[in-house]
Image (cartoon, rainbow, N blue to C red; front, side):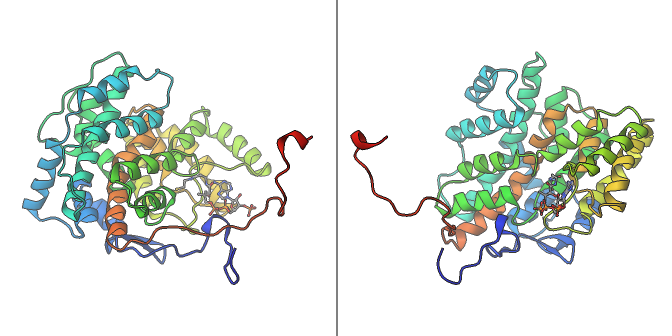
Length: 375
Ligand code: COA
C-alpha cells in the first residue's frame, strides 16, 4: 500500500465514485432526485425504469414506448429455454438466472453499438428477458412448459402471467410492482459496484449484469429476502418467534432482513412495504404472520436498535402472495437490472478503471528453491 493511503475494511465510508442515478440524502432514498416514497405511491416500475435509464420520468408517449420495447423483447430464444431445461432441478434459481442471462447474451438482438441509446435499449431487452427466464424456469420446475408472453401487460403482471399461467389479480400486480419500484436502485451497493467495476474494464453490459447477479445472490445482500422468510416460516406462533430471537440476540446471531450499511436509523423502503404488507396479511386473514413478524422486529429495533431493511417485509409479502422462496432474490434481479444498467451507462461515459490497493499480509521476500531441494 502506498504512503498516505487509508484502509477501510469493506470500503466502509470510502467514496468510490460519482453518480447522478440515486443517493441516500439524510436517510432519504432519491432516484434521480425523486423521493422513493413518492415514486412508490405515484409511479409504476416501467416509469421508474425509464427514469433510471433516461434520467427523467416519462410522459405518456415515452411510457408507451418503453412498454412496447419490453413487449418486443420478451420472447426467449429457444436455445435459452433448452439450456434452462437441462439444468438439474436442484440448482438454485439465482444460479439458473446467471446462466440464462449469460446464454441469452449470445442472442442479443439490439444494435451492436455502445452509444447510450444502444445501451438503454440493451438494458430494456435484458429487463424483459430476465423476467421471462425466471418465469420459464419456474414453470419447468413445476412440470409445465414456459408460457408465451402476452402483449400489453405491465412488467409485474407479465411476470405473474408467465409464471402462473393466468392473468393476475390487481392486488398481486400492484404489490409486485411496488416491490420492483423499491428494489430498482440503491447507488453504490455491492452488486452495483460489481457491475461498475466490470464496466470500468470496458467489458460489456451482459457481463456486468451476470457479475452483479453473482454479487446479489449472497445472503448479506439480495439473498436476505429469502433468508428472512426462511427464518420466519420456522415459527407457528409469535411466542416461538420471541423465544428464538431472544436466543439469537444472546448468541450474537445475524438476523437476516435487518441492518444496513447506509441506513442506521431505518430503511424507508421497509416502512413503505410494511404498510402494504399489513393490509395484505389482514385481507388474507393471515394476521398470525404479522404477529410473528413483529415478535422478531420488536427486540431488534427496541433492544438492538437495528432496523428492518426492505428484504424483511419483502420476504413475507412474496410469501403471502403465494410465491415460492426461490423466486424472491431473482425478482430483486428482475428490478435491479435497471439500476445496474443506469450505472453501467454512467460509468462508461466518464470511465476510469477501478484498481484499488491492498495491504500485503503474506510471506516476506524469499528465494525460489529448485524443486529437487525442497523438503
Ligand atoms: N442481526 C444482528 N446483528 C446485526 C445485524 C443483523 N442483521 N446487522 C448488523 N448487526 C450488528 C453486527 O453484528 C455488529 O455488531 P458488533 O458491533 O457488536 O459486532 C453491528 O451491528 C454492525 O454491523 P456490521 O455487520 O458491521 O454492519 P455492516 O454495515 O458491515 O453490514 C449488513 C451491513 C447489511 C451486511 C448487515 O447489517 C447484515 O449482515 N444484515 C443481515 C443481512 C441483510 O439483511 N442484508 C440485506 C441488506 S439490504
